[in-house]
Length: 110
Image: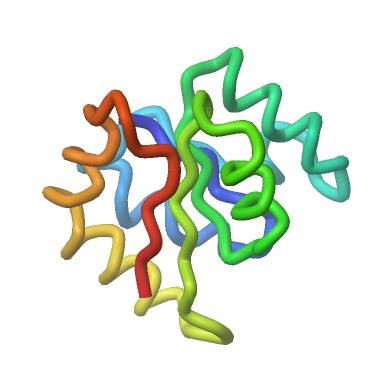
């Protein structure tokens, strides 16, 4: 599974999770910073990414449209990068099951 990390997440995360989530990237890396959520949503859909974000707008979009793409909602407030990395690593099993599920569109982690 590859993650597309929204611009509200640090670029330091990728290097610490790439062993578990190969080919994951940041929205910033793709030149999609300050881009409308619809564009990011469509990019993730076409390129088979799971979006990971603290942005509630993606949560609403996922509720309205379902998947693909799938969405991991990081409900952690203003947390350090190390906490985000820890969650993505510690919850790898749950995230993998979510990725394989045909029914689930949203995974809320906090």
